[in-house]
Length: 178
Image 1 (cartoon, rainbow, N blue to C red):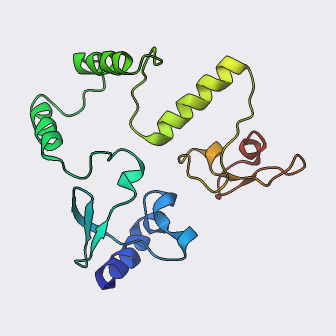
Image 2: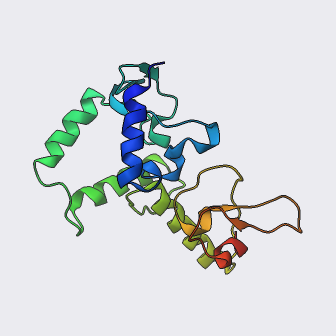
């Protein structure tokens, strides 16, 4: 696979972006390689900046369940953007979306809209802590749960092992509760 331009972009990115990527999951450290850079994607295929065509098994880590750039979604985004992109205050569409979700998934009683998986995980942790009255959380070792401090913790196995911060800047106190 040709990686010349991706390698150059990664080297350049490391001079202006910490670690060369905007999320630790994109760093490719765990697979002993450097990331490739995407030029475009359609359906289940990604084309990188070097012209390589790849099947996307990641789907943007979850949100692209319909594939990349489906015509119906692009059309809906274009139509919605005509009324504004972000308001920072409540709007009727978020109520409509929440109602649809609660109708389609009967076990879901209420919905909180967030901007990222990290925010969703942080909200779920806060909700669980509030409901149970407990501070400690459990996470899957080796899995990405978001970019929040308490989720950037590696833990051993067994009752006598404790979590260790997996990134500089994560306080030991966060690791103690994970």
